[in-house]
Amino acid sequence: MKRREFIAALGGAATWPLTAGAQQPAMPVIGFLDSRSPDALTDRLRGFRLGLKDTGYVEGENVITVYSWAENQLDRLPGLAAELVRRQVAVIATTGGPAAAFAAKAATTTIPILFLSADDPVRRGLVASLARPGGNLTGINFFSGELLAKRLGLLRELVPAATRVAVLVNPANAATMETTLRDVQAAARVTGLQIQVLNASTSREIDAAFATLVSERPDALFVGPDPLLPQSACPIGQPGVAPRDPRDIFDT
Image (cartoon, rainbow, N blue to C red; front, side):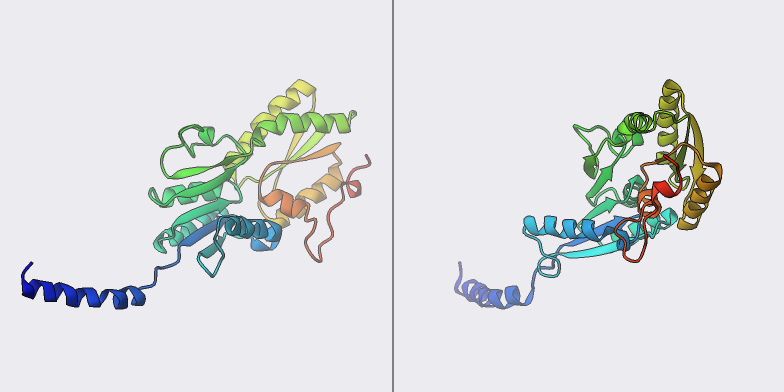
């Protein structure tokens, strides 16, 4: 190396610590996309943050989480997912049903997406297979959709004299509703039960559905596996809200 080149290199090296000190690495950003509202998910959010902490991440210290809530309005999910993509988050965690996962999947093919699924994610079209998901999605399948027939059988054991069962579903979540009704109706034919379908996509419609239950008095109620329905039909644990007791509706 020539003397002039050596001096130039030495001068450049002298500035390295200053440059490195001035450029602090940006904290990774997690996108959190949910179809519901945060009010009903206090415990789950606490668990989410504890899970981050177990892996060495603390919000505000070495990671940032951007929360996006659809407030039970599924048509808002595509826009919320697109906004997370524009913010260039490192990963998108989707909860509150497959609609959030599908919205994120449609918004990006490169950002990793995590999902929770009650039904078979392969049949739903979220991933190619359970062993090799492929693409940018991965997640957990609870197989609760596959347990629909078992749940109906347990309901029949609890109320042996039941002949007519009301099934509460959310038509706004079309894929889940179709799967629920298909599996429940198939199981009902085997057990000899009659199914009465009640639709509800909002809290007001859920109240109307319960008014129908009171007036028509089916023998039992089967709540479909939809994120909206358990938190609205049975708001146990929400401050200031008294849970609906099935004894207020049914004699059994």
